[in-house]
Length: 74
Ligand SMILES: [Zn+2]
Image (cartoon, rainbow, N blue to C red; front, side, top):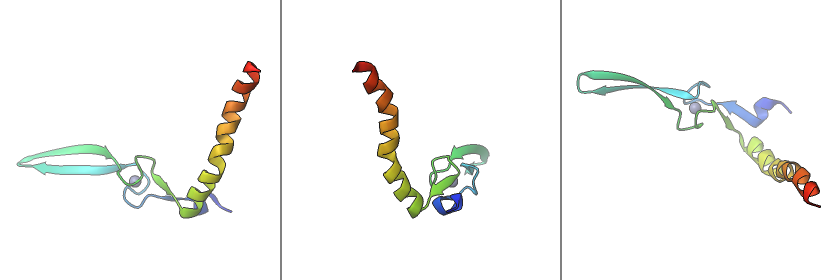
C-alpha cells in the first residue's frame, strides 16, 4: 500500500493549501491568499480508503493517548 492510495493532492489548490484569491472589486484588485475550501489548507484530501483507515485507527490512537493518563490515576 502506498501513501498515494490513502491521500491525493488536492486538485483545487494543486497541493499548496491556498487558492489564489484574485478578486476584482470595482477597479481595485486584491490578491488574497485564502485557505483552500476543498482541503481546508492541508493541500491534500483523504481517499475513500484513507478515510476508512483513519476511522479504523482513530480509536486506537485515542487509547494510546489516554492510557498513560489512566495508569497514573490507578
Ligand atoms: Zn486544496
